[in-house]
Amino acid sequence: MDLRATLYHTNRRLREFFEDQWFDRTRHVRTGGDMSLAQAGIAAASARDSEFYVPARPAHIREALRAIPVTDASRYTYIDLGSGKGRTLFVAAELPFRRILGVELSGRLHGIACGNVRSFRFRSRRGGQMEPIHGNAAEFLFPEGPLVLYLFNPFGASTMQQVLDHLEQSLEQDPRHTVVILLWPRCGDQVARVRGMRPVAKNEHHEIFEAHASLPGKPGKAAR
Ligand SMILES: C[S@@+](CC[C@H](N)C(=O)[O-])C[C@H]1O[C@@H](n2cnc3c(N)ncnc32)[C@H](O)[C@@H]1O
Image (tube, rainbow, N blue to C red; front, side):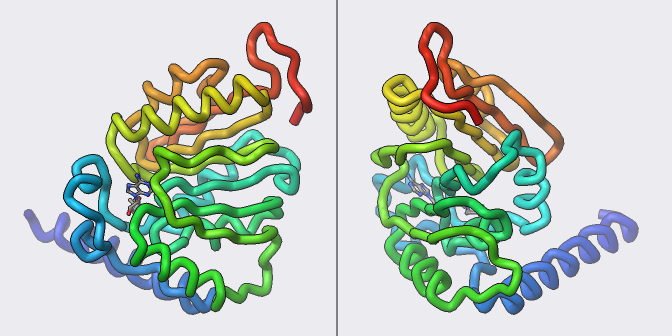
């Protein structure tokens, strides 16, 4: 690596380090630091399709949230599938989401997220109740009401398909406006195959999809 590239990468790592520190200190939480699957206590069988904990940059989460096609967040439940120590829940709380949920497979990470929810304090908090949930996203049943789902590469294609099958069934039974955010997207093609889902925004960091309140051929309950 030449000097210019080394300086660029060092500068970027330093900026990210200070952004992490600043985020956690101003919110009284500890969401920084990667954690391997072994450290997170995720068993070998689950680990085959799971990614380890690495928190997203707050700037990238905010950028994606600014791009979602939602006019009144207070009607929506935000759900981070693979929520780790809970960082995105605290970014989502900058918007007035009705409920803010995080589903995490690792008991250890879930415990840290619960501690963070208890210690979280932020003057500009607007979001509603925060609920970290310990469980496998593949078995998670989506709550009623309009949804904003966020995923930052938590697992591979097979778990993703189980999640999307549940989502499709849920929207089939109860059509409602649903937004899917993929950070550093790897499985946009799978999301695009969900019935009624269409792409709405894309840049180098994220891809965003939405399904409307009425699926093709079915009347919807509520418009967004
Ligand atoms: C790349 S990290 C993303 C962390 C967080 N969402 C963020 O954006 O800062 C992926 C997380 O997904 C979790 N995970 C992996 N497989 C999972 C599964 N099947 N169900 C729920 N969580 C899972 C990992 O333990 C890890 O915390």
